[in-house]
Length: 375
Ligand code: XIL
Image 1 (cartoon, rainbow, N blue to C red):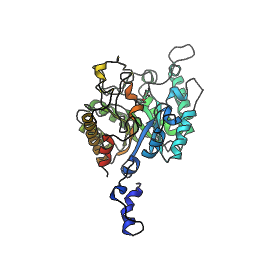
Image 2 (cartoon, helix red, strand yellow):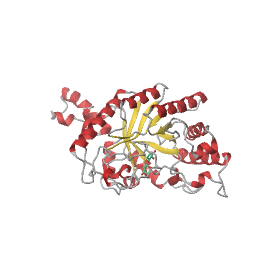
Image 3 (tube, rainbow, N blue to C red):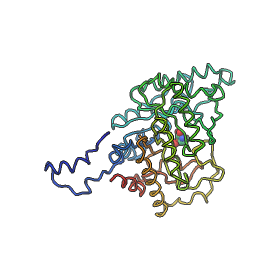
Image 4 (cartoon, rainbow, N blue to C red):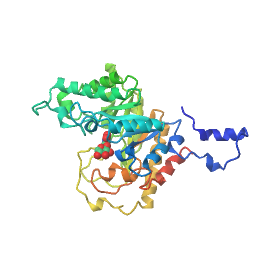
């Protein structure tokens, strides 16, 4: 476990090595330092952050976080938009940025039903690809991507969102063409491409008991086959009203830990805006509701009482994370409220405030609340 330098300051004082400092100087002021020894804290970086065109955000991310994920740039549609034509420009830049700032990288994502080009699932005539063809493409992609970053990417989201809300397997093209074994195939291929990488099954709404059970079945099936899996990734796109009972999050962490795998909180945010009726309250990208002003009440700013409520819930969640040794990483899905995907999902054009840094990159009450847990 890492020890942060600030914790040594009292010892140095005792030894008379350094002049006395004000107590506030010993307060860890960055998430990466404050939570060292508990878990890694990270953020997803969008293209503007990776390329440094979002003013100040890259520096903020480098100071605050010790692990990063590409928000979009390691998805299939960006890495291999056409068959055999790989574009690693932005993902290479992310790796360079991470290494320059002593950060881990999580690769997101090797297999998903979203943001994957149509050609992957089609043969030359546009008819559905056959099983062998699709397996071959999957292997080529995983070898090229996980192989390229072998030894540099700490862990991979190998399979993303394979489950329906009831815990059954989602009827994706992967399932249709390859059958339920596709999950094991992907994990085995990832392991072959980078034997030292930590392999993650990632999904949203895993706090819900039925979906939690589905993930437990996935982990057990891999373990029964002797295929490596190291962690379950709980996306954690939450809101002020959901999960209704935060203990459901704790129960899921415990259920996964009991299988001997770690838990990584992979895509944390806490929307303050209501979900429209008909949403499954998770992160299903197919949802796209028409903009309703009534569901966009904070265009002019986040009211103090709402910020306080969000802070309280963030603190309660982090208390749960701190209570469970199985939690090895907590990654926010974005750096500042301005760059959050929640401004455009599940409704385009709203003003949400789901992260712990505001639109100017200043710490919000939620930041103070989670830091208070370790100060
Ligand atoms: C989102 C990105 O944040 C958006 O920029 C993009 O338009 C759509 O995808 N679950 C995932 C992430 O695993 O990859 C998604 O990211 C959010 C839901």
